Image 1 (cartoon, helix red, strand yellow):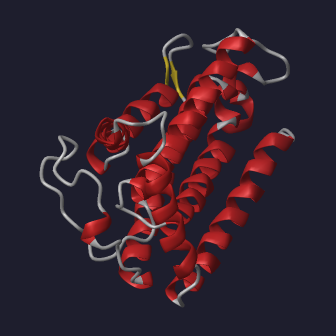
Image 2 (image 1 turned 60 degrees about the vertical axis):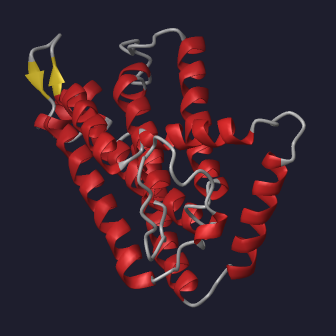
Length: 250
């Protein structure tokens, strides 16, 4: 018999569907011109605020740091990271078994890529003009390619997806199951610090895409919805397997 599905997974699934539906509706709005004025205002204000801040006088260094942070959310690097995370969730070395539900991490990431392709090919949201780009020839990357359409921000979507899956693989599945303490980070303080670091990374990538002039605010918001939606969808399906093997195998 199937056991009752934990409430947390149900909430993740419902939130995922809501976010993905919101992404679709918001994408249609962006295609119709929603938020154009806000996009320009946000980019100009953010660039001026950082460049003229007395605490951030080295604007070029700030740009390099932000550009470097997005390197890990690039298509090539993020694909490698997701493969490693998927393998970490798939193989249980301690119990010498395979958690087949973890394969849904790859499916969710593939659907995320399709969502990004949909936005780029259907929404047709023009990228910021070249004169708004900060550090177009930094080491991340050395040669800048200005994409014709920028919605949604794939870097933002991938950063959020990787962060959510990372927390799930190394923390949530093992630490909150019926009070059992199987988490890699058994110490709650360490888990909290890890969660804060993931949130900080997601925020850094999101802000950097706007500050560097690679994306508009609407692009980043679309990436946030896309990454969160498929990230939570992965959580909804991979969480039962690590701590409830009878549920997955019955």
